[in-house]
Length: 367
Image (cartoon, rainbow, N blue to C red; front, side, top):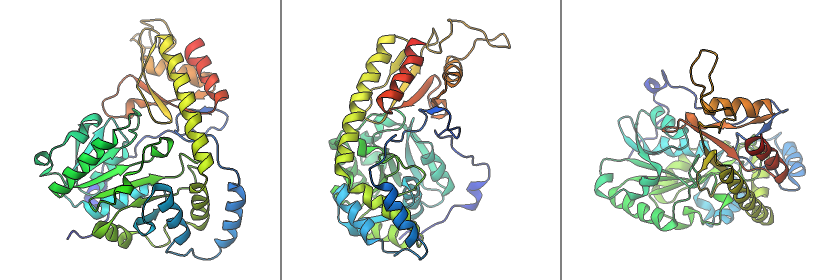
């Protein structure tokens, strides 16, 4: 039985923060963070009521939150482990499954925190193309302690077929490997959570703050069963979810009409934006099931300048830099996707409401 580990002290030195989307200047239209521009009606009053109760410690059992989460993803509430955001669920899963010297399969290009969190446990990330992770065989998993899958994948937006995820989980169990499934954006799709599988070799990490438009709230949870679930619950920090976050999170997870409307709006707007960008001819757009699109910028104009434009030092200007500068001057912020492993000519754009999306298309297509 593995002991629960904290961050490995020797792994901290030299480790850097991972770039993320999110623009602090509120005067700019932010397409760099993949969060819903809308929140459910009634959130403010729920938060205000919970703020009063925050004068006392929360119930560390979080019964209402667990019940809501269990209904939300379709699992037994006892398997839910409350966490302050999806990333906290990921770290908790790695803390109880990895030891120094262990090996973890990490998809790329994908969320940069996976590799960082693996390294902070003193383990080693093995980078595998995101579309190939589900193809691991039992034999190839023999020396692997943990596999990470992001579904839909960030930043590409592709959604692995449920059958492929199920097959990977079967092979992980046969090999004695833990499977961590990050479902941070799955709520934007119709696909069922892997939490319904109730598999004792699988940990599911969920984030509430993206779908419900409250990234600063920091609310999420893990789902795990059997001894693995018991270990996550034992290792969870006491009172790790504040009363307002727990109350608002439980409320949001019950807003089924809001979730349905969000899925429909995002799917419609994503298709509309994809068609406009492809018709422009300067961008390659990755197929996406997520609330964002990954764009490869054409050096012959995708950045908005003439082909072969020159920077101040006499060298060829980078089309991504050109595009980021042009959009910022227009009051819009995109996500520079070059920080994702293996991408060198890409930006990522979130799907917002129609008015904001129209403004983005004016700059990217008409500008």
